[in-house]
Length: 288
Length: 242
Image 1 (cartoon, rainbow over the protein chains, first blue to last red):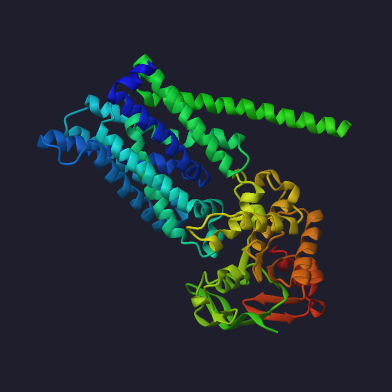
Image 2 (tube, rainbow over the protein chains, first blue to last red):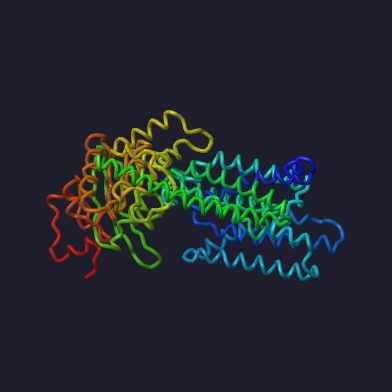
């Protein structure tokens, strides 16, 4: 099975893409989770679906590729990230309302575009749940560029993002460009979602950004350790999920999410064991 | 003595509601100023104005001799809020990481965290007696310990002025005394200027060098020893509206 992934180009593309999103999705996910913005990833992914449906509609109606579904999804996702920010500033006391507005707007547009295209195609199904055979060389090139951008920006803005995530008030008082950093962060989120949909699918992409992080913060001491663990769990989920998806002929989005949930359950058990061990040591110290 | 913060005749209102009227105040180098007053008396508003987060309708504010609107040397000023209460309890950050955040504005975007910065963090943590907890998650500490960590985060950039907004809220009584002693030590030994908003009149009167009572206007400014508030008004300071 591993030989197949090395032998066929489309499977190699999938594997490389998987390894890249297994790195960047949990990495950015760490900031998304601690900033309590997990649902924003969901809203953006649903708007990405609208973009993809728009791209597919254009392909079908015009018979010539004007804009590929991938780029249309990417464009819609970036625009939605700007709209979310606008709505959050307009409803300062009810900021979470931006999420259902954008999410339902995305689903609504998707339904319209899918209907105009006269129904559900197999291609759209692969966008919804991911596919082991959907990544073209062109897709891989774009995903490599997105990954480089994400790694560079997080490398430069790591300290500032951490301050902003931990204490927004302190960030503003310290003279950090909080608005600009948040804006860049939202754009990165839109890019990572667009990069991940080929493998995990629109409906499950936020899972790869949040579940490995949820497992990591149960076990980690400190933010850096949480990032390392989240990436480790993300990569494990992607690799095991991809191979098992290919073996059982199931869309990899489903298997990747199931593996990451298994890792999360395992983290609960390990945390309990660590805690029990700590208590035992403390008790023995107290007795002696 | 040099004036660190100079506030002259400021007025400020939220839409139509006046919050501060003709407020003037001076904080000199080495002061430990306690800012007290009833809820809605404008204490936090005054601090936000001093930090340049709000603009006054009238009057002027100077930090280190410069107008706050054009002030750039923010590394000279640190702010500690009511974090023991408002802080996200599950945040996975160690004491080291939290204190290091205090250096972020100084380091900027493109410089890396160096051995010199690491040493500065360790020194600040030692100053608040938390060295044993350097690699513990902040969420695993008590409210009093967490507030010490936030003081260390404020200290790490070696500011000349620290502004504290009700830092003792959420800290149990036993730890409050130790917290005041820490502030007094930093004030007397390190020459740090402190401005602290509080409802704890008994505590602040014992440790501060100067007291200001603010209820939209400055009602009292002077030594804590000479300050007296009628018994009937004491509930106001605890924030209880009877």
